[in-house]
Image 1: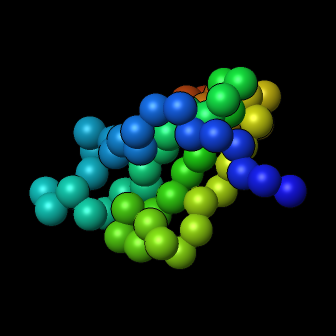
Image 2: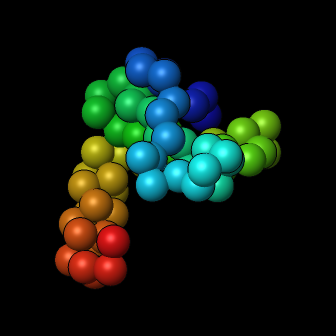
Image 3: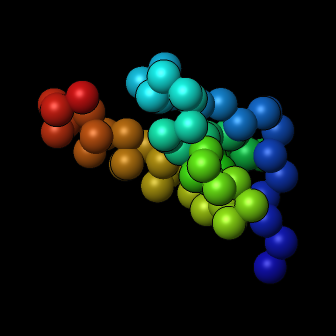
Length: 67
């Protein structure tokens, strides 16, 4: 199975640490999904998430209220 095409560059959260190396990076994939990787070790792999899964993740994070 091939990985979804990444259509926009990876970006880091504005909440990253001062050295900008303590976060995950997220990129949009074709068809609205997201690719996620560790900013410290991007060569260790990328996970891919469907638009539905990404929306559910964001809903859960926002509902947590601790950010």
